[in-house]
Length: 570
Ligand SMILES: *Cc1c(COP(=O)(O)O)cnc(C)c1O
Image (cartoon, rainbow, N blue to C red):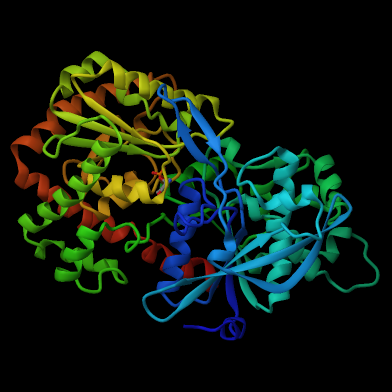
């Protein structure tokens, strides 16, 4: 394994992300963005890339979900102990916040690959006795607190992160911002590269924008407006003091307020969205910018169940580090593919039956839905016409749900309560289970143990979506609205099924919820259910296609190779 000295001897790509989901022992992620960041780091390690990641320690995690019998969500802190898993670097630094010096330390965690390589992840932490109680809490809550708290966190991540890398001795050749949270790093870099000139006519001139742009890469992750952080200049000045002149910043981040995405765009030579459709949507949101597309992928080894790992090892050796080998999926005999799936399914069903009174069985077509619970994902679309669903699915389907709502997302929380109510309503007809505490472990069990993976977002708000890619790695077929990655991965009746019209066929006054729900019921009744029960051979063909066509492409090894050739080496 690489030693720390070897790491700092080679110029690195520094990847900044507010959240990173590596495993559930380090609960510093909330959902797709963080898990993607974790998969990115893992693939960087597997591909022997010179890479270092920077994030916050989030000592109280995102939160632990508890649900009462009506599905009312309560949030408990997910406290964890970094010292059990990583070491604190002896180097500390101070960063000025609200005029006070705040001491910052770094925990270093090594993500090890199977091939004698590792990638350090730097977790920034202010919980030190030198700091006031308030400042000690600045790196506690992921996406918690008010605007001021968030701005401080982003200042620590961006500016503090760059300084910490310097302090630790890293030489950085590219800074990759995973979403706008880290965009203050550009201001720190502008300070570092300030031109040394005596007389200036235009104050813009001392800032070496070109050099900083050469250093920066920016990935935007959502078309949802709330996903693009905005701060007032008053708040910025009060938190960061005279860190970077407001007058210049207004030209880079927006006249009226600081738009973190805009700041990232204006100081990056390479900008991308996370699927082709998302690139188009982002170009509309930010006219005038050259926005590229690198479609997301998932880390194949992480997101393959033990049962599938076994048959992949037997028939497709080398698959984990070269997922292109999935192109040869046809060499696995149908019976063995089906048997591996049934093993994973049994594990999931046993798990559910022992923790709930759902009484699920192994033979029934099982539909899974799990992701962050938030309005645009429409987790309750399946229940739009509950009588129709009951008629179609009575005795033929069972449904498993999971997902957390952000503590302040009232609508998201209501959706969980609605699912609980529908579960009661469908008793005796369709078994419905809701697994509390969605995390990476639950995700793996679910995406590998159901037969069909359902996704019903409101177009075009699902930038990419990644859980469907995880399902595909386990031969689980996708049944989804055509948005994000599924536009690229879907071949009707071959890799899975679409729900509703093509994105281009949606008029502005269409009653899209109704149209999508109609199509969902129609296909469930006429395609998905009959195929599952009456034509197992074709079903297995579709499972093969999920692996051979979807997992083959939508993995983070392919994604990282593209970041290297299109964004990093330029
Ligand atoms: C993969 C994953 C997500 C993202 O799923 P989407 O389909 O992109 O919404 C969220 N949370 C967890 C725990 C995951 O593993």
